[in-house]
Amino acid sequence: MKSTRRFHMANSFGFKTTADEVLEGIDLSGRTMLVTGGNGGVGQAIVHALAKAGADVIMTARKLSSAEAAAEPLRKSAIGQIECRSLDLADPSSIRSLLADWERPLDALINNAGVMALPSLQRTGEGHEMQFATNFLGHFALTRGLHEFLRERRGRVVSVASTGSLFGPILWDDPAFRFIRYDPLLAYAQSKTACILFSVALSRKWGADGITSNSLHPGAIATGLQQHTGGLQTPEKWRKTPEQGAATSVLLAASPLVEGVSGRYFEDCQEAPIIYGRPEERVAGLAPYAIDPSNAERLWQMASAMTDYSA
Image (cartoon, rainbow, N blue to C red; front, side):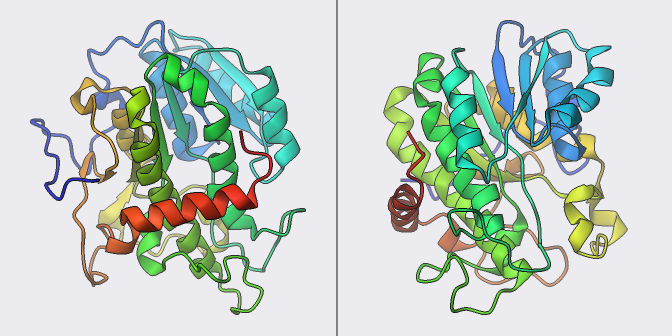
């Protein structure tokens, strides 16, 4: 069970910290890391920072050509290798294809890919709401399928969530919006709450294998993710660059400062506090429903039933 005591690191990392600053002096040579959605924005910054520190990074995108185009300029300053793979997290056959060809022990899996606030209700071929399927269910299946490779390296699973989780819990009885009227941000909130709960469940179920699992909010970053929200509404003082947005993911994936830390939720490179009402100024912190172990177990069972393509 997650400790009620927050984890504090003896460093000056915070809101403005960049991924390169987190990895300063750290040699990741010989490590293999997989980053979903690595072809732009924060994902591209994560890939770049890890590869510059020596890690071999496999980056995925729905279109292989998009991944290759994003990787090409990064390779010029990378020490580790950058490999590209196609992956559509909303398509079970795409997930199966990647898993069928995977043979490498894995030091870290960064579940970064996502979609946000799709203006109209979209469903996958299996009937799942698209944000829930892409942001959570696809990563659920991918992660479970990579279990043995993570176990071999006592690896880390990093789930990119969002303070969007503060806008809503899991809609247990109607996650696909068949009765509840579809709302873009409510659907997004549900998907990101699911990412946090998934991380909690992984920590509890896979901890005995030496696998750690944490989730995070990267911050408000002006990337293509916000294409359906009319632009960032966050005040400029709370906005981050992609390099700053990548910092917490990189910390959880590679820093020795969080060795053995698991089942927690971070923002600004520190563990976020649990709050009991949405803040009025800067939306930050973690809702109790998103960290509750009983909710995590319930979600695991629900997702297992929804994904016949999981390992």
